[in-house]
Length: 353
Ligand SMILES: [Zn+2]
Ligand SMILES: [Zn+2]
Ligand SMILES: [Zn+2]
Image (cartoon, rainbow, N blue to C red; front, side, top):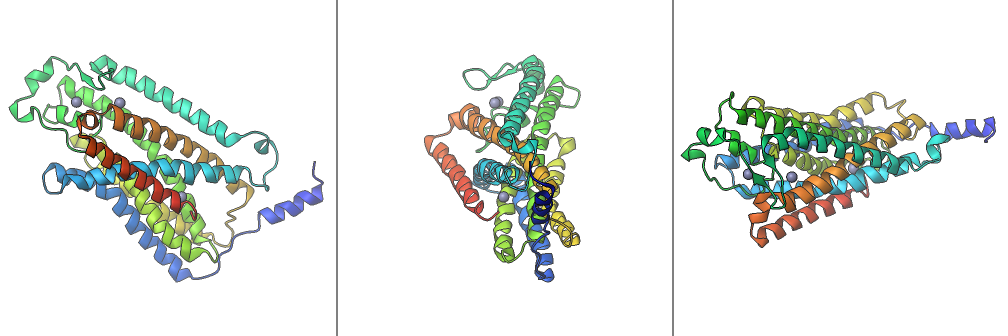
């Protein structure tokens, strides 16, 4: 047990404020530059997907954004969330129960188990009951009898577009059905399941965005480096999130939801920078509360992104989606290299932020 005097001294060292050193104009400019980058990253895949479906945009644009974005999410999970969580919770300023267990791994483990259970239940109750099943063949469809009466020649065998996943195709099956048909109900349930996972992912990514915004606002001599790195950081992370937003078969009534979710991501870092500038005289990036809050939330976010990356982006997208199973090997390899490029670039950026 430390003596009271030692504790006090340690507290001083840990709550020593931040390294803010002026350059307010430049810091304010970062609010707008980073906002433009994040909005572009998050909204480009959504536009690319929508325009390429109407033929106004080359299909490869969405394909590139999607697999590059998947790589970004994988690297973010490990380099931008797991590593800082570990650093925060093992900081020597912390004392007590938080230092007596490997909480980061514990929280990641709990998050993954919870997500797995939620997805398992959602799959059972919203998909198996509707005759839409994943079997060993990958993706088998035993559609409700009503479907044949709803679909007409114009909706029949459309090719799955490049980069579409096993969930994305539901749009084709349901787009032309009217709101009262059983297919619509099926689509709504699929949509509910995917909405849950996209909100979980959005939360995981936004938390990191808020914290790096606060950090940038009060950073010291490394401000310029951090500024440049974060422009790319947020643009790439936006691509990761945006390509997930674009993949979901949003019903017609919710066509604007992906734009709102992209917008929410786009403003998260700028708002955090503004708040950080507002509290620049009192915000302590290495204060105990900051360390614990950041460590715990980073751990939860890491669990979310690790699960999404391994299960959705790697296993489902590459191995179980019918567009990938039917694609020529060259497409699969290009997708794989895009994923590597996204992961590698994001991993390198992790050196600074
Ligand atoms: Zn980061
Ligand atoms: Zn299908
Ligand atoms: Zn699947």
